[in-house]
Image (tube, rainbow, N blue to C red; front, top):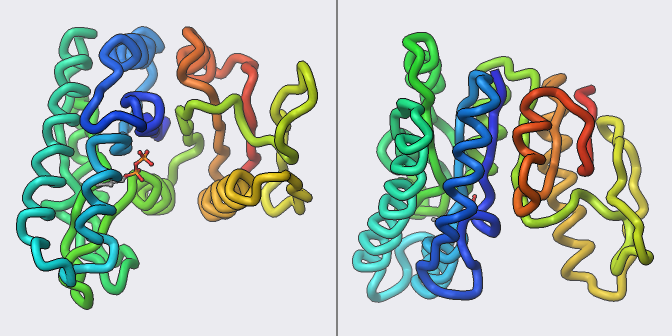
Length: 254
Ligand code: IPE
């Protein structure tokens, strides 16, 4: 079984509020269906979550004067995006069960405490693909916080003894320096825990890459392999699901 995260930067236009990329959602869901692999799907928020979550400071809890409206709106917007992804799976002929993190998880001070993996396992056992997504969730200390799709990936990879995780992003993979040289590809293979020396003129970019690798190492520490690929390129997700060599970065489980 393979855990797949459809990143918000691929399935939405991150720069425009509530703008889905319908053609890409349709193609990626079709690639998953065509691969014939058993998958568990997570998706991110892109412009359906990050813009308002920031506006209402939801990562910090319930301090904003309009926090109630913020919680309601971001949850509603995420369910709209999830509805579009679910519709696309239906069009591709795949039965799915939508499991919102906000309905079943508990956080404490921004850390995921509970998210019952057995619900996902049950759907998988009866042949239905579970699909979850980043969400506004309850937090015992802060009132609420944001659960990212990455939080769900990390948790389920550990709990369900997953062997392969795929992050579908809008990047070719992990690069050790920015901008890459002309024609240079991403680092193809990284061992769990390998020390990569990142360098860039833009600290935001390297910070982002370093954080991403840290998150991936968290997953590979369970022995699971992680692949990062560019979902904007047709066929790459399907090839990776089928175990073919692709352009991207593979991080080997430790
Ligand atoms: C964020 O999820 C969820 C909300 C902001 C409600 P992610 O952090 O997984 O989303 P992307 O993939 O980065 O857009």
